Image 1 (cartoon, rainbow over the protein chains, first blue to last red):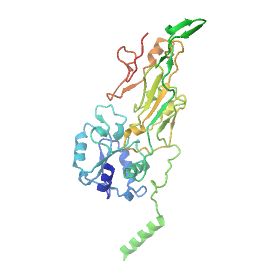
Image 2: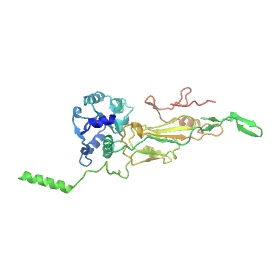
Image 3: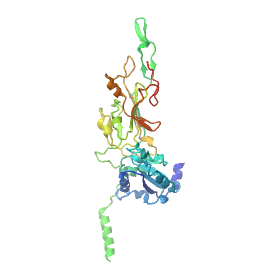
Length: 178
Length: 175
């Protein structure tokens, strides 16, 4: 439902606004790399605009920091209503290496509702292009959570105080199962 | 006239250069051979030594014990910088840096990996094998430990303090 509405509202080109809230410029360079003719994100109608009032999508790079939190929030509120936020890079996705520093609040999702995550430090231009294409519905996402168990519950656990002599045998009276 | 000639020359230059744009989302673009992508944790080789959790600069690998036998290794991957130090220190070679870079996802939990490791215990008493000297016993559970519930991280596991169990700890009988 929401996807359909989004596709209807954002039928035309996505105009992106490029907000760096204290990153190291690595992701900036990769995002600008995506807009060059070699990777050519303008095939999908993506255009870089200079003002958040013209933009549909905000590309967030860098963690949410104490000094730029207000400005980032204001830029987000200045965007017109059907708006998306992409978190690009491991700083924006999870707070970065200095997530526990005094000046870093954490990931961008502490300030803005993030719709799409592109992890990487920095992500490759292909990865950003893939994320944009996946958000536009051109390709499917590939990652899924992995869970693995080396042993299945319950595991029998024997205690020596439960050893009882029964006839000729010495057996465990009860086996506790964890 | 000269401007028209220069325009024609420009067109010819563009014609000779051909198409440079990668057909990327339609055709795959393999990364270069030494590229480090998402680390893949092999649960059949992992021994649960928590070396990767100790060495992760972003502290995204969490290791904690839910009970005596089960140790959980969680790779969250949100702020992973793909530095490969976990793969370097792993004594069993259980972590490989794969070439996966297409990790874009609408839900950040999708890049999580969680291994439940079986730690072997003594068949008689049911407890884990302990280190011989008290100093090594102190070091046994002293790896870094992140509190996921309260979004803060502490340096020391609380497993040795009485009445303060580890996160989602089962009650371990103290006999």
